[in-house]
Length: 102
Image (tube, rainbow, N blue to C red; front, side):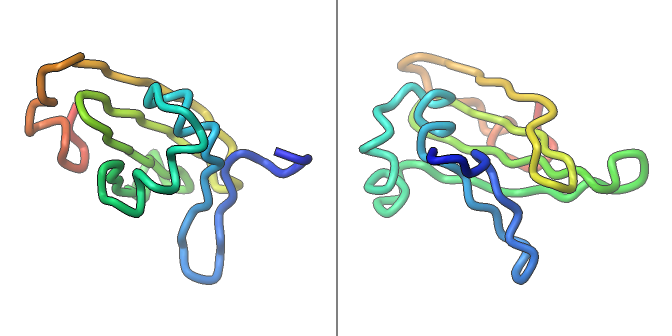
């Protein structure tokens, strides 16, 4: 990662840059495959901005096959919590593919 943080909040457009190694570890794929999987739509994601008690936090959720990687970040892009759910060969339940879905 050459001294750069794994997750960077890009203030200009509210987007995040996430190091491929972070996604690879959380989703169980080789880091070199991450760009191609993203481009092909095989890794998908959404971002939620915290409100009320969670103001200043973000939740990034990534999906690949039967896995969901969730990262909770502070306003500087530091990871506060990380979790992965792995359903193996079974598809993820649809409720896990929606914002706020647990």
